[in-house]
Length: 372
Image (cartoon, rainbow, N blue to C red; front, side, top):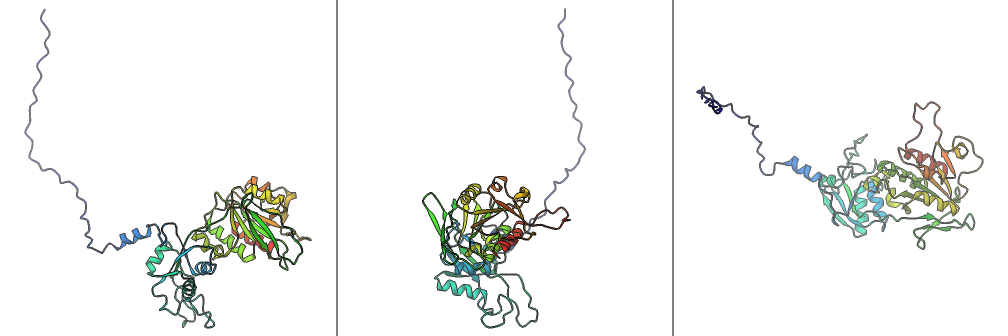
């Protein structure tokens, strides 16, 4: 038998290639040439996103605007102030005012007032360009009003610029509860305490007023929006609230945005504190004789106090704490359980699905009812 042999492989025949030219590769457009010093946009972008570092390092906040800077300068000792930054041409301009002045005293500029207070306190005053001031304030308005022409019948207000204060962050003390309020009589100042620990206390003095004989505090349950928090602090200070306590977690930080929204109230209020557990704070304070008002619209009917109904007795008949919930979820159930009653702001019968107010608006109304 003959062995099997595979057929020989066929050899490939190379055909001559027709002459052709390869297509040119696509080229990107020529890159523009930037001469030295012409990259203005890139430089501005870099400066804008550079972390703001003041004379004391990274642990520095930049307060901006006259309605925040001046109260902070006047409240000596509350903050560690690093430096005051003012616009380079501020002193040369005579038209920077709060509003259209009616006399020479009102015609004093915001920046001049800030410089005078800072100079008297020995605070460093730095001249800076408007671009650098905008960088420090993160492009936010850093002056209450920009230069206006006082000769005009209707002065034009332009983009604010001019005043930034470098400060250390606020040192907010944590408290556990409010102590018993033992009043000797309705005319004598009474001292009570905010308990920090089992043995440490903050002494608080209450001065009786003709319209109010007991202290009123505000408790905030996880208010996360800085604008709302600032507006609430502004109302609390305006109506004379004795103190504010906030949840330590899930609450807007007390930063320059909050200070600006509070119109400087954050800088001058004496008692702003945090607490680890708001439920525990309310429970222990209630055990010490404080009446707790919540704001839960879904609370049982017997615990609701409608502000639209006529009342024969005042709402503040003992030391009182008003509790406000967060913007979205409102007051947490565990917090609401520690409230004696709930204040209800009644709206129109046909509200179109809007069943509540913004928390800062509600705060203003309720504080006016309790303190006004």
